Image (tube, rainbow, N blue to C red; front, side, top):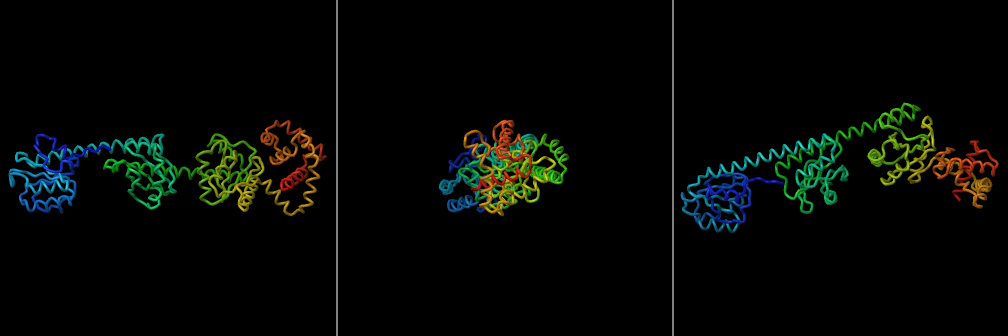
Length: 492
């Protein structure tokens, strides 16, 4: 960051002043905060640090000068200007030697240079520095505001801030995870986790490698933190610019949170409409908001688990899958999803602690039935600590638990024997095709797509099943018998 403050070296370079360096020339890069003329032998109480102190040495001699210099060092002054030709024809030798020893620059001020000339020179530089800082602050605030209200969003604000302060910036959520980052900033997130855990509110200054890092909490209900890393401490303009970014990000994140909350409540309301049998109204609303709905029939997915894990799943779905291929919402202690439910299950498995139940395919108007099946299957998955349970499997297992296992096995072998014999001769895949067809509730298109065959091929196979077993697959009872037989076979 630019620092335009006047240094001792720059002041010496102003030839009209006629200043000469008498001690600690190596310290001339120090910035001058202000000028203070005094003849006190101990002016510490009147100094803030960073001043160029001016004196004629009225009360100083070879004996008192060493102690005087050490008191100035303790006060943190930038340097000493010693006016000669009045109280002293030259600077006391002990003063120069001590200043050289402790590294305090001493400038000799000739009699023809009034102290007021030095004060004016420093004052002009300070005023120019303050004006430049004000201009930089205003420009930075304008650029950040344009970015925030434009298409950049929080990520754009973070990247713009990094350029303005010539450093790197991270935006962390309540868990310490990175939500936005400027280029090359992400590797610093791990180093900041302990400091993040200590920060409750306000500001914390720490170090990460060669960078000074300022952690600043955002003014939002959901705790967030902005981390700013710079090689040099932030100057006044940099601090103002960072504070502007904090305000803009707090407002943007709070607006996003309110918008996301409203959208989730809307999704939950649409789930309630579907559950109440108002499928047409719900789907019309989905189309008007998202441009389309997942194609029916639907397999309803219900996901159960801790509230925090369900929120994480909803966040992931909102960010990556919400739209025409997936509709999701919340219903009580469940996250519901329609459409590409396999993608939803993958997200749930990455989050962990979640258990899903999948209904049989249902029409829009039969959504209440699918919802009931999905919730029952999800409860079963939770009890079994399984990531996914299909309702058809759950229902089949439930009945088989009360059936004599030997009798069930004999029934299964008898019913499926003609199909197995057919498959063993290499003339088809009747058992697998029948299983898939029943899993999809007799839906030809869905089952044939899952098997990778034409629906006419699947129809031919089902006719062959009916022919070999002498049973009518259009009968619900027959379908149930075949499903139970397949479930028994799968368990052995």
